[in-house]
Amino acid sequence: MRQKIVAGNWKMNKTLEEAKILASEVMAMVADEVKGNVKVVLCVPSPYLVPLKNQLGNSSIKIGAQNCSEHDWGAYTGEVSALMLKSMEIPYVILGHSERRQYFGENGKLLGAKVDKALAAGITPIFCCGEPLEIREAGTHEQLVKQQVEEALFHLSAEALQKVVIAYEPVWAIGTGKTATAQQAQEMHAVIRKQLASKYGEAVANEISILYGGSVNSKNAEELFSCPDVDGGLVGGASLKSREFVDVIKGMK
Ligand code: PGA
Image (tube, rainbow, N blue to C red; front, top):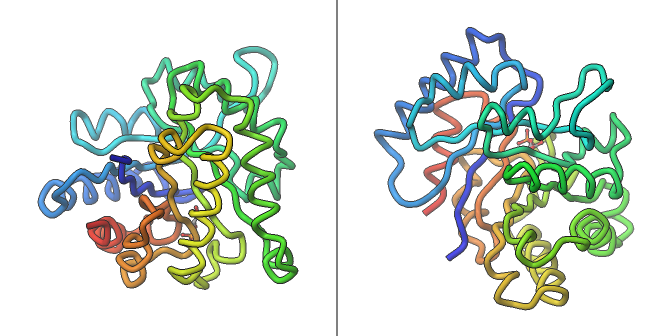
């Protein structure tokens, strides 16, 4: 059985005080209201990783980072390495988010190196892929997403790949309020799973959690999460409000 996951991506939002309040509200509501085996992850700004991890204590909610360096240590001012995350016992890291690709020039080769560092540190990468609007309109989205997956992940062994979570996030749906339809999400998730199966075999492909991201909210979550190849969500805006985020999580049946 694939792990069902709902991860919040807080991006660069909240003061420490606000972050602590949000985390404690989510923790209380999840404990009260969320049943079943969905894993909840909060991917928070790096300065908040340790305080929030301590605050969550032994709650079922896990903490994730939003990026890591392709290097281990050294003169890389402003960077955070996977080994640092490991030393803070952070179990998840988002890699290759479209905002990182777009604003920080991250490409497939670099992301492959970051994935390697995360895995070597025992951290689960949530690897993001997804096409911009013009590619969707040109009809070449399957090709681009397959290329993104291949470039960053296909050097991995089957054993390593099984430790990766993939998030399909069409760029045109991120922060725009424009969600992919359940059918569009399912189609792309099936394309990715088939691509994984062609290289690693069906048994491996069937074990990989593929999350959908892009304007997921409490109203559309249930329909998106009911698609057979959608194993959860990576949630931006809706993860910044506790009630809304927990209602998204509850869309995962
Ligand atoms: P959104 O962001 O839910 O605000 O569209 C998703 C993401 O960027 O991960």
